[in-house]
Image 1 (cartoon, rainbow, N blue to C red):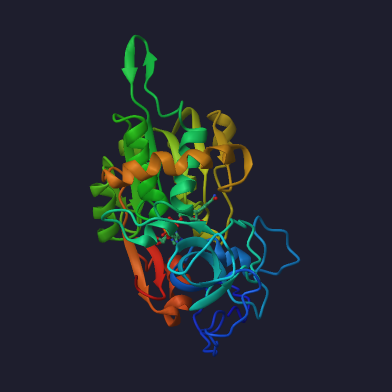
Image 2 (cartoon, helix red, strand yellow; image 1 turned 90 degrees about the horizontal axis):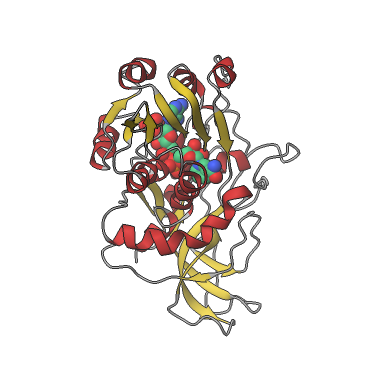
Length: 351
Ligand code: NDP
């Protein structure tokens, strides 16, 4: 349950609480829907934006105090009143953070996907549907394909072929690793610089094929970009000081894909000090929310392209698993401290 608005970071037990309640699985009314056993739930950075004063307009609907948190998840049908589903079906849906779920339930989420049947994919866990093949993967795909298709191509300058340089912050999470690997698919020769906050994450970004990887807590982003840049595209997952350092190291006519601002999501100072670089260097800034806006039409082709890449190991996944619903508050909080290494997944019931 969401119990109190966080003024800074989410504190498990204070802002989000695990509560035990009885449910009569045999007799709970389905109202034409289905009873699901929750298998996996996704913990995502944007959920903190939903834990805000509901009177302030936000890109996503609020979770109200006293509500159960809801987000993307994977479940198995236990009972069904719906002729389209039967016991045993595996499904993807937006689910309340409950062990068992009557669907449709009281979901306040903006992404009101219909209950979607999913298939097990060889050598991939079902939880891949909330990570690489779910919302984070779609975000990376939609943003790169929609905005960077041209910027990622080599250019002819004075008769020479020049490859672009892409910088990705938050490079070790499910969005960041997809960006690294999919950018490589679009142009195998693009130079990729990637940053994250631990040695383990640096190894992950290297294994995904980034050319230059660094821990932004140990090396100044400005120094690395000055040495390895200038950059042409910045995939921004974090904003804050990293964005400032990127702005000072751009080529003219560069592109910023503003995907996330996690450094500010817990209320930290959000001033961009070098805003003037945007007009001085003639930069374009493309901000977007996955599934909506001008690149939403690309979502339809996502699985057709991403599933074969994932099966071929060209788009890879790693997860940070939290065992049991009791751990869900920690899974929500950890993202904002960098304590997750990989897609944060709450394993409610193992497959
Ligand atoms: P991750 O799994 O990568 O988790 C978030 C990571 O952010 C943490 O592990 C941490 O890693 C890093 N972080 C936390 N605080 C800071 C900070 N102060 N400065 C720099 N890095 C920080 O998340 P996702 O891959 O799921 O999401 C990445 C970004 O994409 C987020 O900003 C998210 O909000 C955004 N997003 C946007 C969408 C859209 O529609 N526009 C859709 C989906 C995601 P570290 O150890 O490196 O600090």
